[in-house]
Length: 585
Ligand code: HC1
Ligand code: SF4
Image 1 (cartoon, helix red, strand yellow):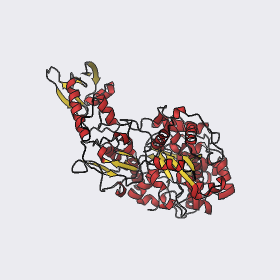
Image 2 (cartoon, helix red, strand yellow):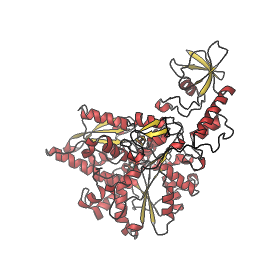
Image 3 (cartoon, protein in one colour):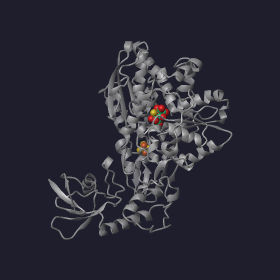
Image 4 (spheres, protein in one colour):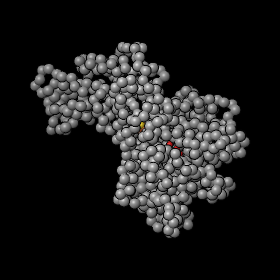
Protein backbone atom coordinates (compact mmCIF):
# COMPACT_ATOMS: atom_id res chain seq x y z
CA UNK A 1 0.00 0.00 0.00
CA UNK A 2 1.17 3.56 -0.77
CA UNK A 3 1.37 6.26 1.86
CA UNK A 4 1.93 9.99 1.98
CA UNK A 5 1.54 12.57 4.71
CA UNK A 6 -0.86 15.52 4.65
CA UNK A 7 -0.03 18.12 7.29
CA UNK A 8 1.65 15.34 9.26
CA UNK A 9 -1.26 12.94 8.90
CA UNK A 10 -0.64 9.56 7.24
CA UNK A 11 -2.90 8.87 4.26
CA UNK A 12 -3.00 5.89 1.89
CA UNK A 13 -3.59 6.29 -1.83
CA UNK A 14 -3.90 4.47 -5.13
CA UNK A 15 -1.28 4.68 -7.83
CA UNK A 16 -2.09 7.36 -10.41
CA UNK A 17 -4.18 9.64 -8.19
CA UNK A 18 -3.50 13.35 -7.99
CA UNK A 19 -2.73 15.09 -4.71
CA UNK A 20 -6.15 16.73 -4.86
CA UNK A 21 -8.00 13.44 -5.38
CA UNK A 22 -6.21 11.82 -2.45
CA UNK A 23 -6.87 14.83 -0.25
CA UNK A 24 -10.59 14.82 -1.16
CA UNK A 25 -10.90 11.10 -0.42
CA UNK A 26 -9.14 11.55 2.91
CA UNK A 27 -11.22 14.56 3.90
CA UNK A 28 -8.25 16.95 3.78
CA UNK A 29 -9.44 20.37 2.65
CA UNK A 30 -7.73 22.03 -0.30
CA UNK A 31 -9.49 25.11 -1.69
CA UNK A 32 -10.29 25.02 -5.41
CA UNK A 33 -12.20 27.19 -7.83
CA UNK A 34 -11.65 25.59 -11.21
CA UNK A 35 -11.25 21.93 -10.25
CA UNK A 36 -14.58 20.22 -10.40
CA UNK A 37 -14.41 16.61 -9.36
CA UNK A 38 -17.95 15.57 -10.34
CA UNK A 39 -16.96 16.15 -13.98
CA UNK A 40 -13.31 15.14 -13.59
CA UNK A 41 -12.40 18.66 -14.59
CA UNK A 42 -8.98 19.83 -13.40
CA UNK A 43 -7.68 22.48 -15.77
CA UNK A 44 -5.25 23.92 -13.21
CA UNK A 45 -6.11 27.49 -14.12
CA UNK A 46 -7.23 29.08 -10.85
CA UNK A 47 -4.09 28.04 -8.97
CA UNK A 48 -5.84 28.11 -5.61
CA UNK A 49 -5.05 24.48 -4.81
CA UNK A 50 -1.38 25.23 -4.20
CA UNK A 51 0.37 22.87 -1.77
CA UNK A 52 3.99 22.51 -0.68
CA UNK A 53 5.46 19.08 -1.35
CA UNK A 54 8.58 17.51 0.12
CA UNK A 55 9.62 14.38 -1.75
CA UNK A 56 10.83 11.49 0.38
CA UNK A 57 14.22 12.33 1.92
CA UNK A 58 14.21 15.92 0.53
CA UNK A 59 14.86 18.92 2.75
CA UNK A 60 13.47 21.53 0.40
CA UNK A 61 9.90 21.65 -0.70
CA UNK A 62 8.33 22.83 -3.93
CA UNK A 63 4.94 24.40 -4.45
CA UNK A 64 2.63 22.73 -6.98
CA UNK A 65 -1.04 22.75 -7.95
CA UNK A 66 -2.65 19.76 -6.24
CA UNK A 67 -5.14 19.17 -9.03
CA UNK A 68 -2.57 18.46 -11.72
CA UNK A 69 0.22 16.78 -9.73
CA UNK A 70 0.28 13.01 -9.24
CA UNK A 71 1.02 12.00 -5.67
CA UNK A 72 4.12 9.93 -4.86
CA UNK A 73 4.78 7.53 -2.00
CA UNK A 74 6.53 9.00 1.00
CA UNK A 75 5.74 12.60 0.11
CA UNK A 76 5.05 15.10 2.86
CA UNK A 77 2.41 17.55 1.69
CA UNK A 78 1.44 20.80 3.40
CA UNK A 79 -1.86 22.35 2.45
CA UNK A 80 -1.97 25.40 4.71
CA UNK A 81 1.52 26.33 5.91
CA UNK A 82 2.70 29.89 5.73
CA UNK A 83 4.40 29.55 2.36
CA UNK A 84 1.25 28.05 0.82
CA UNK A 85 -1.03 30.63 2.37
CA UNK A 86 1.10 33.55 1.16
CA UNK A 87 1.14 32.22 -2.39
CA UNK A 88 -2.59 31.50 -2.38
CA UNK A 89 -3.26 35.01 -1.12
CA UNK A 90 -1.12 36.50 -3.87
CA UNK A 91 -2.98 34.43 -6.43
CA UNK A 92 -6.28 35.54 -4.96
CA UNK A 93 -5.20 39.18 -5.19
CA UNK A 94 -4.58 38.70 -8.88
CA UNK A 95 -7.98 37.05 -9.31
CA UNK A 96 -9.71 39.89 -7.51
CA UNK A 97 -7.80 42.54 -9.44
CA UNK A 98 -9.41 41.02 -12.51
CA UNK A 99 -12.89 40.62 -11.02
CA UNK A 100 -15.61 43.19 -10.80
CA UNK A 101 -16.26 43.43 -7.08
CA UNK A 102 -19.80 44.68 -7.12
CA UNK A 103 -20.68 41.93 -4.67
CA UNK A 104 -23.65 43.72 -3.14
CA UNK A 105 -25.70 43.44 -6.30
CA UNK A 106 -24.34 40.11 -7.52
CA UNK A 107 -26.63 37.19 -8.33
CA UNK A 108 -24.38 35.05 -6.14
CA UNK A 109 -24.41 37.32 -3.13
CA UNK A 110 -24.26 35.08 -0.10
CA UNK A 111 -23.64 32.01 -2.23
CA UNK A 112 -20.34 32.75 -3.97
CA UNK A 113 -17.49 30.26 -4.13
CA UNK A 114 -14.92 32.97 -4.85
CA UNK A 115 -15.81 34.74 -1.60
CA UNK A 116 -15.69 31.42 0.25
CA UNK A 117 -12.23 30.57 -0.97
CA UNK A 118 -10.95 34.08 -0.20
CA UNK A 119 -12.11 33.58 3.36
CA UNK A 120 -10.70 30.05 3.61
CA UNK A 121 -7.20 31.10 2.59
CA UNK A 122 -7.17 33.96 5.06
CA UNK A 123 -7.57 37.11 2.97
CA UNK A 124 -8.02 39.90 5.47
CA UNK A 125 -8.93 42.84 3.31
CA UNK A 126 -9.76 43.59 -0.30
CA UNK A 127 -6.37 44.45 -1.70
CA UNK A 128 -7.38 46.15 -4.90
CA UNK A 129 -10.52 48.18 -4.30
CA UNK A 130 -12.01 49.83 -7.35
CA UNK A 131 -9.12 49.00 -9.60
CA UNK A 132 -11.12 46.85 -11.95
CA UNK A 133 -11.34 48.79 -15.17
CA UNK A 134 -12.07 46.15 -17.80
CA UNK A 135 -15.40 46.49 -19.48
CA UNK A 136 -16.21 42.98 -20.60
CA UNK A 137 -19.40 41.67 -22.04
CA UNK A 138 -22.58 41.79 -20.02
CA UNK A 139 -24.95 39.70 -22.09
CA UNK A 140 -28.61 39.57 -21.16
CA UNK A 141 -29.79 38.98 -24.71
CA UNK A 142 -31.24 35.50 -24.14
CA UNK A 143 -34.56 34.76 -22.47
CA UNK A 144 -33.23 32.67 -19.61
CA UNK A 145 -29.56 33.21 -18.83
CA UNK A 146 -27.37 36.23 -18.14
CA UNK A 147 -23.61 36.17 -18.79
CA UNK A 148 -21.47 38.71 -16.98
CA UNK A 149 -17.88 38.20 -18.12
CA UNK A 150 -16.71 40.77 -15.56
CA UNK A 151 -17.42 38.12 -12.93
CA UNK A 152 -15.86 35.19 -14.79
CA UNK A 153 -12.77 33.55 -13.29
CA UNK A 154 -12.19 31.34 -16.36
CA UNK A 155 -12.52 28.07 -14.47
CA UNK A 156 -14.13 26.40 -17.47
CA UNK A 157 -16.67 24.39 -15.48
CA UNK A 158 -19.53 25.71 -17.61
CA UNK A 159 -17.69 24.80 -20.78
CA UNK A 160 -17.19 21.30 -19.44
CA UNK A 161 -20.78 20.66 -18.36
CA UNK A 162 -22.10 21.92 -21.68
CA UNK A 163 -19.70 19.72 -23.62
CA UNK A 164 -19.55 16.63 -21.41
CA UNK A 165 -23.09 16.32 -20.06
CA UNK A 166 -25.05 18.02 -22.81
CA UNK A 167 -22.75 17.24 -25.74
CA UNK A 168 -23.40 20.73 -27.08
CA UNK A 169 -20.28 22.88 -26.76
CA UNK A 170 -22.07 26.22 -26.79
CA UNK A 171 -19.48 27.79 -24.53
CA UNK A 172 -15.76 28.40 -24.70
CA UNK A 173 -13.18 30.35 -22.72
CA UNK A 174 -11.85 33.28 -24.67
CA UNK A 175 -8.47 33.80 -23.04
CA UNK A 176 -7.39 36.69 -25.14
CA UNK A 177 -8.39 40.19 -25.96
CA UNK A 178 -11.17 42.13 -24.43
CA UNK A 179 -13.55 39.22 -23.92
CA UNK A 180 -11.19 37.25 -21.64
CA UNK A 181 -13.66 34.88 -20.08
CA UNK A 182 -16.69 32.79 -20.90
CA UNK A 183 -17.79 33.30 -24.49
CA UNK A 184 -20.25 31.71 -26.89
CA UNK A 185 -18.83 29.47 -29.57
CA UNK A 186 -19.59 30.98 -32.93
CA UNK A 187 -21.66 33.89 -31.65
CA UNK A 188 -21.19 37.20 -29.90
CA UNK A 189 -24.42 37.21 -27.94
CA UNK A 190 -26.26 34.43 -26.18
CA UNK A 191 -29.39 35.11 -28.20
CA UNK A 192 -27.50 34.44 -31.42
CA UNK A 193 -26.04 31.10 -30.37
CA UNK A 194 -26.89 28.41 -32.87
CA UNK A 195 -26.05 25.82 -30.21
CA UNK A 196 -27.29 26.76 -26.74
CA UNK A 197 -30.62 25.22 -25.72
CA UNK A 198 -31.02 27.28 -22.53
CA UNK A 199 -30.97 24.25 -20.24
CA UNK A 200 -29.09 26.23 -17.60
CA UNK A 201 -26.84 23.38 -16.46
CA UNK A 202 -23.93 25.83 -16.86
CA UNK A 203 -25.50 28.11 -14.25
CA UNK A 204 -25.51 25.22 -11.77
CA UNK A 205 -21.72 24.82 -11.85
CA UNK A 206 -20.55 28.45 -12.17
CA UNK A 207 -18.74 29.35 -8.94
CA UNK A 208 -19.41 33.10 -9.22
CA UNK A 209 -22.01 35.45 -10.63
CA UNK A 210 -20.76 35.06 -14.20
CA UNK A 211 -23.68 32.85 -15.27
CA UNK A 212 -27.09 33.13 -13.72
CA UNK A 213 -30.77 33.09 -14.53
CA UNK A 214 -32.38 36.24 -15.83
CA UNK A 215 -33.86 37.83 -12.74
CA UNK A 216 -37.55 38.67 -13.07
CA UNK A 217 -38.31 39.19 -9.39
CA UNK A 218 -38.80 42.94 -9.89
CA UNK A 219 -41.35 42.43 -12.64
CA UNK A 220 -43.22 39.90 -10.54
CA UNK A 221 -43.22 42.15 -7.45
CA UNK A 222 -44.80 44.86 -9.57
CA UNK A 223 -47.50 42.45 -10.70
CA UNK A 224 -48.21 41.31 -7.13
CA UNK A 225 -48.42 44.89 -5.87
CA UNK A 226 -50.58 46.20 -8.71
CA UNK A 227 -54.08 46.55 -7.23
CA UNK A 228 -55.58 46.32 -10.70
CA UNK A 229 -54.32 42.82 -11.48
CA UNK A 230 -55.08 39.35 -10.16
CA UNK A 231 -51.95 37.26 -9.76
CA UNK A 232 -51.98 33.51 -10.23
CA UNK A 233 -48.96 31.39 -9.46
CA UNK A 234 -48.48 27.90 -10.90
CA UNK A 235 -45.93 25.62 -9.24
CA UNK A 236 -44.06 23.10 -11.38
CA UNK A 237 -43.86 19.53 -10.04
CA UNK A 238 -40.23 19.83 -8.96
CA UNK A 239 -40.53 23.18 -7.18
CA UNK A 240 -41.94 21.76 -3.95
CA UNK A 241 -39.07 19.30 -3.46
CA UNK A 242 -36.26 21.74 -4.27
CA UNK A 243 -37.13 25.16 -2.82
CA UNK A 244 -36.53 24.10 0.81
CA UNK A 245 -32.79 23.78 0.18
CA UNK A 246 -32.60 27.53 -0.39
CA UNK A 247 -33.78 28.00 3.18
CA UNK A 248 -31.48 25.43 4.76
CA UNK A 249 -34.10 22.71 4.95
CA UNK A 250 -33.43 19.03 4.34
CA UNK A 251 -32.91 18.34 0.62
CA UNK A 252 -35.98 16.68 -0.81
CA UNK A 253 -38.36 17.97 1.86
CA UNK A 254 -41.79 18.63 0.38
CA UNK A 255 -42.54 22.27 1.19
CA UNK A 256 -45.65 22.69 -0.96
CA UNK A 257 -47.97 23.81 1.89
CA UNK A 258 -45.34 26.29 3.08
CA UNK A 259 -45.02 27.82 -0.38
CA UNK A 260 -48.78 28.37 -0.45
CA UNK A 261 -48.60 30.21 2.89
CA UNK A 262 -45.58 32.26 1.84
CA UNK A 263 -47.06 33.35 -1.48
CA UNK A 264 -50.44 34.20 0.02
CA UNK A 265 -48.72 36.30 2.66
CA UNK A 266 -46.82 38.38 0.19
CA UNK A 267 -50.05 39.21 -1.61
CA UNK A 268 -50.40 36.60 -4.35
CA UNK A 269 -54.08 36.11 -5.10
CA UNK A 270 -54.12 32.44 -6.14
CA UNK A 271 -51.62 29.60 -5.82
CA UNK A 272 -52.49 26.94 -8.36
CA UNK A 273 -50.57 23.98 -9.70
CA UNK A 274 -48.74 22.89 -12.84
CA UNK A 275 -49.32 19.33 -11.60
CA UNK A 276 -52.98 19.80 -12.49
CA UNK A 277 -51.99 20.80 -16.01
CA UNK A 278 -49.63 17.82 -16.18
CA UNK A 279 -52.68 15.59 -15.76
CA UNK A 280 -54.32 17.42 -18.66
CA UNK A 281 -51.14 16.93 -20.70
CA UNK A 282 -51.44 13.19 -20.16
CA UNK A 283 -55.04 13.19 -21.40
CA UNK A 284 -53.97 14.85 -24.62
CA UNK A 285 -50.60 13.18 -25.09
CA UNK A 286 -51.92 9.74 -24.14
CA UNK A 287 -54.74 10.11 -26.65
CA UNK A 288 -52.30 11.35 -29.26
CA UNK A 289 -50.09 8.31 -28.74
CA UNK A 290 -53.01 5.88 -28.95
CA UNK A 291 -54.23 7.59 -32.12
CA UNK A 292 -50.84 7.31 -33.78
CA UNK A 293 -50.59 3.64 -32.76
CA UNK A 294 -54.08 2.94 -34.10
CA UNK A 295 -53.28 4.68 -37.36
CA UNK A 296 -50.15 2.58 -37.75
CA UNK A 297 -52.17 -0.56 -37.12
CA UNK A 298 -54.45 0.51 -39.95
CA UNK A 299 -51.39 0.93 -42.18
CA UNK A 300 -51.52 4.71 -42.33
CA UNK A 301 -48.31 6.75 -42.57
CA UNK A 302 -47.70 7.98 -39.11
CA UNK A 303 -45.00 9.70 -37.08
CA UNK A 304 -43.70 7.05 -34.73
CA UNK A 305 -41.89 6.89 -32.40
CA UNK A 306 -43.55 9.78 -30.66
CA UNK A 307 -41.26 11.95 -28.53
CA UNK A 308 -42.42 13.96 -25.52
CA UNK A 309 -42.27 17.72 -25.98
CA UNK A 310 -42.85 19.12 -22.49
CA UNK A 311 -39.16 19.86 -21.86
CA UNK A 312 -38.26 23.17 -23.55
CA UNK A 313 -34.53 22.42 -23.48
CA UNK A 314 -35.27 19.30 -25.52
CA UNK A 315 -37.54 21.18 -27.92
CA UNK A 316 -34.77 23.77 -28.42
CA UNK A 317 -32.36 20.89 -29.00
CA UNK A 318 -34.59 19.42 -31.69
CA UNK A 319 -34.80 22.79 -33.42
CA UNK A 320 -31.07 23.46 -33.33
CA UNK A 321 -29.43 20.05 -33.40
CA UNK A 322 -31.89 17.36 -34.47
CA UNK A 323 -34.46 18.90 -36.84
CA UNK A 324 -35.31 15.49 -38.27
CA UNK A 325 -37.04 14.68 -34.96
CA UNK A 326 -39.38 17.67 -35.25
CA UNK A 327 -42.27 15.86 -36.92
CA UNK A 328 -42.12 13.11 -34.29
CA UNK A 329 -42.64 15.46 -31.33
CA UNK A 330 -45.95 15.25 -29.55
CA UNK A 331 -48.03 18.30 -30.44
CA UNK A 332 -49.41 18.47 -26.91
CA UNK A 333 -48.25 21.61 -25.16
CA UNK A 334 -46.18 21.41 -22.02
CA UNK A 335 -48.00 21.56 -18.68
CA UNK A 336 -46.73 25.11 -18.15
CA UNK A 337 -48.25 26.18 -21.47
CA UNK A 338 -51.45 24.20 -20.94
CA UNK A 339 -51.88 25.83 -17.58
CA UNK A 340 -51.42 29.26 -19.12
CA UNK A 341 -53.86 28.58 -21.94
CA UNK A 342 -56.55 27.19 -19.65
CA UNK A 343 -56.03 29.95 -17.08
CA UNK A 344 -56.39 32.76 -19.59
CA UNK A 345 -59.33 31.09 -21.34
CA UNK A 346 -61.37 29.89 -18.39
CA UNK A 347 -60.41 31.78 -15.25
CA UNK A 348 -61.81 35.18 -16.32
CA UNK A 349 -65.29 33.71 -16.04
CA UNK A 350 -64.57 31.59 -12.96
CA UNK A 351 -62.95 34.43 -11.05
CA UNK A 352 -64.97 37.20 -12.62
CA UNK A 353 -62.01 39.23 -13.90
CA UNK A 354 -61.18 40.20 -17.44
CA UNK A 355 -58.38 38.39 -19.24
CA UNK A 356 -56.21 41.48 -19.46
CA UNK A 357 -56.21 41.81 -15.68
CA UNK A 358 -54.97 38.26 -15.07
CA UNK A 359 -51.26 37.64 -14.55
CA UNK A 360 -50.05 34.05 -14.76
CA UNK A 361 -46.68 33.56 -13.11
CA UNK A 362 -44.93 30.20 -13.32
CA UNK A 363 -42.37 28.90 -10.88
CA UNK A 364 -40.18 26.40 -12.70
CA UNK A 365 -36.96 24.52 -11.92
CA UNK A 366 -35.85 25.54 -15.36
CA UNK A 367 -34.20 28.40 -17.24
CA UNK A 368 -35.55 27.30 -20.62
CA UNK A 369 -39.17 27.71 -19.49
CA UNK A 370 -38.65 31.49 -19.68
CA UNK A 371 -38.06 31.18 -23.40
CA UNK A 372 -40.90 28.68 -23.81
CA UNK A 373 -43.34 31.22 -22.37
CA UNK A 374 -42.21 33.73 -25.01
CA UNK A 375 -42.68 31.41 -28.00
CA UNK A 376 -44.87 33.12 -30.58
CA UNK A 377 -46.69 29.84 -31.25
CA UNK A 378 -47.84 29.81 -27.62
CA UNK A 379 -49.14 33.37 -27.56
CA UNK A 380 -52.57 34.60 -28.56
CA UNK A 381 -53.69 37.88 -29.99
CA UNK A 382 -54.92 38.86 -26.57
CA UNK A 383 -51.39 38.53 -25.17
CA UNK A 384 -49.23 35.87 -23.59
CA UNK A 385 -50.67 32.88 -21.74
CA UNK A 386 -47.85 32.98 -19.19
CA UNK A 387 -46.75 36.46 -18.13
CA UNK A 388 -43.60 35.68 -16.17
CA UNK A 389 -41.49 32.67 -15.28
CA UNK A 390 -39.42 32.48 -12.11
CA UNK A 391 -36.87 29.78 -11.43
CA UNK A 392 -36.82 28.10 -8.02
CA UNK A 393 -33.81 30.26 -7.14
CA UNK A 394 -35.76 33.39 -8.03
CA UNK A 395 -38.74 32.29 -5.95
CA UNK A 396 -36.37 32.04 -2.98
CA UNK A 397 -35.10 35.51 -3.79
CA UNK A 398 -38.61 36.89 -4.16
CA UNK A 399 -39.58 35.55 -0.74
CA UNK A 400 -36.38 36.91 0.85
CA UNK A 401 -37.08 40.29 -0.68
CA UNK A 402 -40.43 40.21 1.10
CA UNK A 403 -38.87 39.17 4.40
CA UNK A 404 -40.35 35.68 4.25
CA UNK A 405 -38.38 32.71 5.50
CA UNK A 406 -39.85 29.33 4.64
CA UNK A 407 -39.03 27.97 8.08
CA UNK A 408 -41.37 30.56 9.62
CA UNK A 409 -44.28 29.63 7.36
CA UNK A 410 -47.16 27.44 8.41
CA UNK A 411 -48.63 24.76 6.16
CA UNK A 412 -51.55 26.14 4.22
CA UNK A 413 -54.07 24.32 2.06
CA UNK A 414 -55.48 25.67 -1.18
CA UNK A 415 -58.90 26.08 -2.64
CA UNK A 416 -59.93 22.80 -4.17
CA UNK A 417 -60.94 22.36 -7.80
CA UNK A 418 -59.28 25.58 -8.87
CA UNK A 419 -56.51 24.25 -11.10
CA UNK A 420 -55.22 22.76 -7.89
CA UNK A 421 -56.28 19.11 -7.95
CA UNK A 422 -53.58 16.76 -9.09
CA UNK A 423 -52.90 13.05 -9.14
CA UNK A 424 -49.73 11.09 -8.44
CA UNK A 425 -49.26 10.88 -12.20
CA UNK A 426 -49.09 14.66 -12.52
CA UNK A 427 -46.71 14.86 -9.59
CA UNK A 428 -44.10 12.49 -11.02
CA UNK A 429 -43.58 14.64 -14.12
CA UNK A 430 -40.85 16.32 -12.11
CA UNK A 431 -38.41 13.41 -12.41
CA UNK A 432 -36.92 11.56 -15.34
CA UNK A 433 -39.27 8.74 -16.26
CA UNK A 434 -42.27 10.46 -14.72
CA UNK A 435 -43.98 11.61 -17.90
CA UNK A 436 -43.58 8.12 -19.32
CA UNK A 437 -44.94 6.44 -16.20
CA UNK A 438 -47.89 8.82 -16.06
CA UNK A 439 -48.65 8.23 -19.76
CA UNK A 440 -48.29 4.48 -19.40
CA UNK A 441 -50.77 4.38 -16.49
CA UNK A 442 -53.43 6.17 -18.50
CA UNK A 443 -52.71 4.44 -21.82
CA UNK A 444 -52.93 1.08 -20.08
CA UNK A 445 -56.30 1.90 -18.52
CA UNK A 446 -57.66 3.28 -21.81
CA UNK A 447 -56.75 0.04 -23.58
CA UNK A 448 -57.96 -2.27 -20.79
CA UNK A 449 -61.57 -1.16 -20.28
CA UNK A 450 -60.57 1.31 -17.60
CA UNK A 451 -58.71 -1.23 -15.50
CA UNK A 452 -55.72 0.17 -13.63
CA UNK A 453 -52.24 -1.06 -14.35
CA UNK A 454 -50.94 -3.38 -11.65
CA UNK A 455 -48.73 -2.60 -9.93
CA UNK A 456 -49.32 1.10 -10.30
CA UNK A 457 -45.61 1.81 -9.96
CA UNK A 458 -43.82 1.24 -13.26
CA UNK A 459 -40.36 0.23 -12.08
CA UNK A 460 -38.55 -0.03 -15.44
CA UNK A 461 -38.62 3.73 -16.01
CA UNK A 462 -37.84 4.72 -12.41
CA UNK A 463 -34.46 5.66 -10.99
CA UNK A 464 -31.57 7.62 -12.42
CA UNK A 465 -30.06 5.25 -14.96
CA UNK A 466 -29.13 7.14 -18.12
CA UNK A 467 -31.33 5.26 -20.57
CA UNK A 468 -34.31 3.22 -19.38
CA UNK A 469 -36.30 0.89 -21.61
CA UNK A 470 -39.47 -1.14 -21.20
CA UNK A 471 -42.33 -2.76 -23.02
CA UNK A 472 -45.94 -1.97 -22.22
CA UNK A 473 -48.98 -4.08 -22.98
CA UNK A 474 -51.61 -1.91 -24.64
CA UNK A 475 -54.27 -4.56 -25.24
CA UNK A 476 -55.47 -4.60 -28.83
CA UNK A 477 -52.70 -2.27 -29.87
CA UNK A 478 -50.18 -4.86 -28.77
CA UNK A 479 -46.95 -4.42 -26.90
CA UNK A 480 -45.18 -1.12 -27.36
CA UNK A 481 -41.54 -0.32 -26.68
CA UNK A 482 -40.74 2.77 -24.70
CA UNK A 483 -37.53 4.52 -23.70
CA UNK A 484 -36.62 7.27 -21.27
CA UNK A 485 -33.46 9.33 -21.55
CA UNK A 486 -32.20 12.40 -19.70
CA UNK A 487 -29.18 14.60 -20.40
CA UNK A 488 -28.62 15.69 -23.98
CA UNK A 489 -25.30 13.98 -24.73
CA UNK A 490 -26.98 10.68 -23.86
CA UNK A 491 -30.03 11.70 -25.88
CA UNK A 492 -27.92 12.30 -28.98
CA UNK A 493 -26.25 8.92 -28.52
CA UNK A 494 -29.68 7.31 -28.32
CA UNK A 495 -30.90 9.17 -31.41
CA UNK A 496 -27.81 7.89 -33.25
CA UNK A 497 -28.58 4.32 -32.21
CA UNK A 498 -32.18 4.76 -33.32
CA UNK A 499 -31.20 6.11 -36.69
CA UNK A 500 -28.81 3.19 -37.21
CA UNK A 501 -31.72 0.88 -36.43
CA UNK A 502 -29.99 -0.66 -33.43
CA UNK A 503 -32.95 0.13 -31.20
CA UNK A 504 -36.61 0.58 -32.06
CA UNK A 505 -39.14 2.38 -29.89
CA UNK A 506 -42.70 3.62 -30.11
CA UNK A 507 -42.60 6.30 -27.45
CA UNK A 508 -39.60 8.17 -26.04
CA UNK A 509 -39.41 10.57 -23.11
CA UNK A 510 -36.57 13.08 -23.24
CA UNK A 511 -35.57 15.49 -20.50
CA UNK A 512 -32.67 17.82 -21.27
CA UNK A 513 -31.35 17.91 -17.73
CA UNK A 514 -29.84 14.81 -16.16
CA UNK A 515 -32.38 13.61 -13.59
CA UNK A 516 -35.19 15.55 -15.24
CA UNK A 517 -36.72 18.72 -13.76
CA UNK A 518 -35.63 17.88 -10.20
CA UNK A 519 -32.12 18.79 -11.33
CA UNK A 520 -33.11 21.51 -13.77
CA UNK A 521 -30.97 24.53 -14.48
CA UNK A 522 -33.16 26.71 -12.26
CA UNK A 523 -32.88 24.62 -9.09
CA UNK A 524 -30.81 25.54 -6.02
CA UNK A 525 -27.08 25.22 -6.57
CA UNK A 526 -24.76 23.30 -4.31
CA UNK A 527 -21.32 24.87 -4.14
CA UNK A 528 -18.51 22.94 -5.80
CA UNK A 529 -20.85 20.07 -6.48
CA UNK A 530 -23.08 18.86 -9.27
CA UNK A 531 -26.55 17.51 -8.64
CA UNK A 532 -25.79 15.82 -5.33
CA UNK A 533 -29.46 15.77 -4.38
CA UNK A 534 -31.05 14.22 -7.46
CA UNK A 535 -31.80 10.98 -5.69
CA UNK A 536 -33.42 12.47 -2.59
CA UNK A 537 -35.41 14.90 -4.69
CA UNK A 538 -36.56 12.01 -6.87
CA UNK A 539 -37.56 9.93 -3.85
CA UNK A 540 -39.55 12.90 -2.55
CA UNK A 541 -41.43 13.06 -5.86
CA UNK A 542 -42.20 9.32 -5.71
CA UNK A 543 -43.44 9.78 -2.15
CA UNK A 544 -45.88 12.48 -3.25
CA UNK A 545 -47.21 10.02 -5.84
CA UNK A 546 -47.50 7.25 -3.28
CA UNK A 547 -49.46 9.49 -0.94
CA UNK A 548 -51.93 10.65 -3.58
CA UNK A 549 -55.31 8.93 -3.27
CA UNK A 550 -55.68 9.13 -7.05
CA UNK A 551 -52.67 8.20 -9.16
CA UNK A 552 -53.96 8.21 -12.74
CA UNK A 553 -54.46 11.44 -14.68
CA UNK A 554 -57.75 10.36 -16.26
CA UNK A 555 -59.23 9.92 -12.78
CA UNK A 556 -58.46 13.47 -11.67
CA UNK A 557 -61.96 14.80 -10.86
CA UNK A 558 -61.10 18.34 -11.82
CA UNK A 559 -59.74 17.12 -15.14
CA UNK A 560 -62.77 14.95 -15.92
CA UNK A 561 -65.02 17.90 -15.04
CA UNK A 562 -62.98 20.15 -17.33
CA UNK A 563 -63.57 17.78 -20.25
CA UNK A 564 -67.22 17.17 -19.38
CA UNK A 565 -68.07 20.85 -18.97
CA UNK A 566 -65.79 22.61 -21.41
CA UNK A 567 -63.42 20.72 -23.66
CA UNK A 568 -65.49 17.75 -24.72
CA UNK A 569 -63.16 14.85 -25.39
CA UNK A 570 -59.35 14.81 -25.46
CA UNK A 571 -58.22 15.83 -28.91
CA UNK A 572 -61.45 17.77 -29.55
CA UNK A 573 -61.41 20.92 -31.65
CA UNK A 574 -61.29 23.18 -28.61
CA UNK A 575 -58.70 20.99 -26.91
CA UNK A 576 -56.57 21.28 -30.02
CA UNK A 577 -56.89 25.01 -30.11
CA UNK A 578 -55.94 25.45 -26.46
CA UNK A 579 -53.71 22.53 -25.67
CA UNK A 580 -51.68 21.71 -28.77
CA UNK A 581 -49.19 23.53 -30.92
CA UNK A 582 -46.74 22.96 -33.71
CA UNK A 583 -43.19 23.40 -32.48
CA UNK A 584 -41.76 24.99 -35.55
CA UNK A 585 -39.21 27.74 -35.54
FE1 HC1 B 1 -40.92 20.24 -15.51
FE2 HC1 B 1 -43.09 19.95 -16.76
S1 HC1 B 1 -42.16 18.36 -15.47
S2 HC1 B 1 -41.07 20.30 -17.79
O1 HC1 B 1 -39.60 19.15 -15.73
O2 HC1 B 1 -43.66 18.73 -18.11
O3 HC1 B 1 -39.63 22.86 -15.68
O4 HC1 B 1 -40.97 20.31 -12.50
O5 HC1 B 1 -43.11 22.12 -14.89
O6 HC1 B 1 -44.32 22.29 -18.19
O7 HC1 B 1 -45.58 19.58 -15.18
C1 HC1 B 1 -40.04 21.85 -15.50
C2 HC1 B 1 -40.87 20.29 -13.59
C3 HC1 B 1 -42.60 21.24 -15.41
C4 HC1 B 1 -43.91 21.37 -17.66
C5 HC1 B 1 -44.69 19.73 -15.81
FE1 SF4 C 1 -24.78 24.77 -22.70
FE2 SF4 C 1 -27.18 24.49 -21.53
FE3 SF4 C 1 -25.53 26.42 -20.73
FE4 SF4 C 1 -26.67 26.58 -23.13
S1 SF4 C 1 -27.71 26.64 -21.15
S2 SF4 C 1 -24.55 27.00 -22.67
S3 SF4 C 1 -26.75 24.42 -23.72
S4 SF4 C 1 -25.18 24.20 -20.55
